[in-house]
Length: 452
Ligand SMILES: Nc1ncnc2c1ncn2[C@@H]1O[C@H](COP(=O)(O)OP(=O)(O)OP(=O)(O)O)[C@@H](O)[C@H]1O
Ligand SMILES: [Mg+2]
Image 1 (cartoon, rainbow, N blue to C red):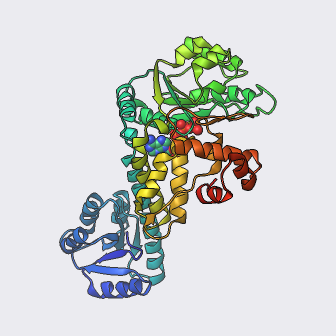
Image 2 (cartoon, helix red, strand yellow):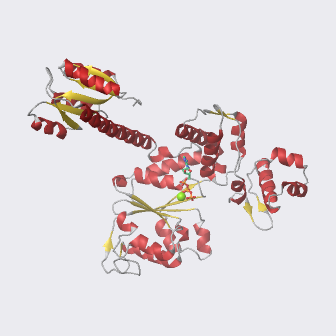
Image 3 (cartoon, protein in one colour):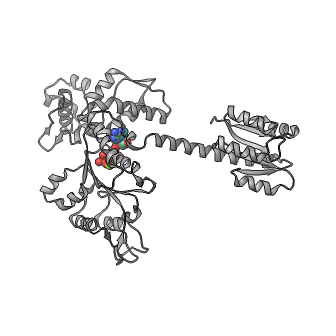
């Protein structure tokens, strides 16, 4: 609603309308007025009214009927009732029916303004919340996954198919490919959406803590366990549990998790009570688990338990046709968030995005667009800069002490960029030295690789 909200004053007493109207207008509110309930309803259907202040007793519809209709027609509009002498009971009924408050006659200016300010603040917060919720709902489920490439279409189809079931899902994909969005979508499209989706990263928490985070502990289970606490499995009861970075779990904890999945029950640390929960398990990882199994780092029996269905998110470089869509999505998102008028990506700039290797996948694209929108002048983005680290430390171009390995499928431009970036790094940032090593003129270095 506009910065200066409309207030609708409804009373058949013209003197009261005029007096209250003056008080409100002096505060900067825009005031509309109506002498009857019907007149009020007509106005409500046309103007965006944030607040109705209405007498309880009106010539046609009474105030209560107006309140009911207003709440039904316009749930975002607040209503304050004006009560005459001795109509407290009716005022209470009005509050029960959703009126924000009531003010008594004769109207006191200060009390009126105070009530109006509070009612409008509530109205503003509620309408902001509704708007946020609407925005979120728009991008619920698979809609949150931007991308129309064949592999993404297949991923979305698979999500729709398995979301309503209780099968365990392993979500695999390089860092930044959208594994968490897939987990959100699986939960949102399941019957469990009314319960919680609980997330925990096995990489972020030390092993000793992770066990009690997952399974909870009783009081005194270990030093510092002053009170009993339920674990994530209990918190997710009836809902979904996402174990992120599952490959980072230690062998001991893998063994315990396997037992829990086999038995369907567990005990809190330091506890004896068997706890049974109904949890749908999702696991995510960027690690190649079959390889981790071969290296003895992951239990194959646990792998079979958590991997009833696998969703593999391809890296962004393998679905380049999604880049324009994703770029447009982030452009609109950040332009709106920062209040910028940027609308367009120039063709040359889009070519840059299409040529980049995206070792950080969609997350990197997100950051590149965010930076570009923040730095943009006018309505067009004419060029992008890529964070040098992104093209150096990603898994796409693998680096070790002696060199880099560039995957087949990379373009010459990307390969060149990776080599130049790695050489600059090898020369501790000294671009002149790097140019000499690469056998290119310093001018070329500064002109073509200024962003590295
Ligand atoms: N298909 C997509 N559409 C829209 N946004 C996406 C998409 N994929 C990823 N993102 C965005 O990219 C960022 C990274 O996504 P997410 O956190 O799901 O990645 P991840 O695979 O879990 O990475 P990590 O392994 O590093 O945890 C988020 O901001 C997410 O909103
Ligand atoms: Mg993640």
